[in-house]
Length: 112
Length: 113
View 1 (cartoon, rainbow over the protein chains, first blue to last red):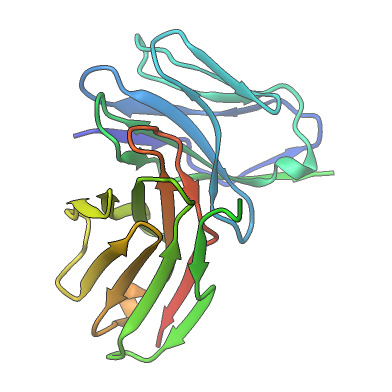
View 2 (cartoon, each protein chain N blue to C red):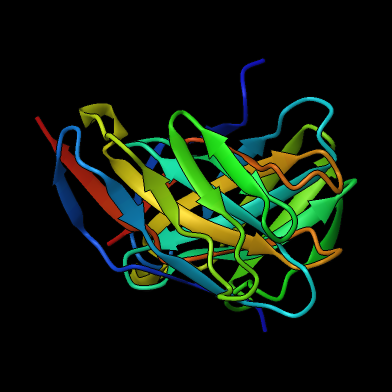
């Protein structure tokens, strides 16, 4: 079945550092890929998405590129801020399917 | 728009009691999802509805769990009887049918003692 594997956390960085959170997936066909973010005490929010190979999703300085050859969708940001502290979830939806499969989540803490 | 509204925000109950969690999806959304989040198992899909009809309940852990959606603006998740291992954060989410962006509520933190 479809599955998502994320880099284990927690991840702690200093402000303005470069961020990478790894995500790889297993799926049949051509899934859509997502990153969701969960701030403390809140539900998840969509951060960015990509629906086909080589697509790059971007939002709020975050980027992720759909790499079919490596089945990956790594999240990157060039300069993180304290306000980026949250839990980040990689997810996929199978081709033609509606439900999302989420990774375990990666807790990110940014220190000033 | 008020977003997806869940109630209560926190629920503390004793083992064996019935628990009912409530969700109001975003107006106009045709799909509704119930997720459970725990440290050990992460985020798990329990059940989802399209146009008020349950489509996939394969994630419901056992018969103690049931979910209903009597109309387009309301859904409940019921646990009867509750057990300590049911302690988790339960999220409701909604989306436009076939639109993959989910909008999540703030969740219900359930503690079963």
